[in-house]
Length: 138
Image (cartoon, rainbow, N blue to C red; front, side, top):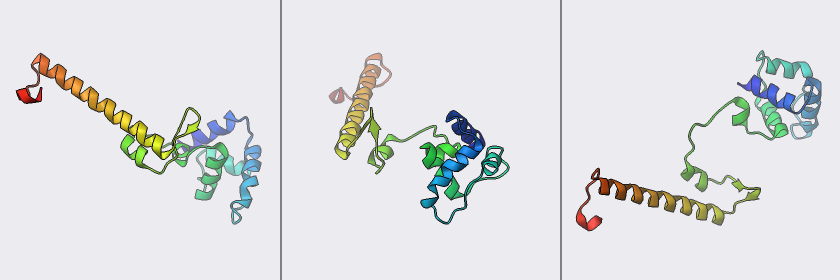
């Protein structure tokens, strides 16, 4: 998955292999112990012959502004919103970064919506006879 994603990102920017190598080499000041990248080296990554180091992966992710998860092909089929809202991750919506207060308010709205939906579903089940509740709970 990584080779395909790297090739798609590079070609999407209209870069040749040497151009991408040059772009990555500009970040060597952030990674002083790394050697310069070359076009053939990146080509070997795209063909799956070799794999980049962790630092090289970080450089690629930074350059293309993508996560390491995306770059390596990890896909999430399910995300628990509880975890997302209580995480320290910066959440953005419509170009605005949400504050902690915003995140908690939105979290509360989602919980309220789901609670109301559950009550509505239970009420419908009671009326159709699928669910029976004690009379004091209706």
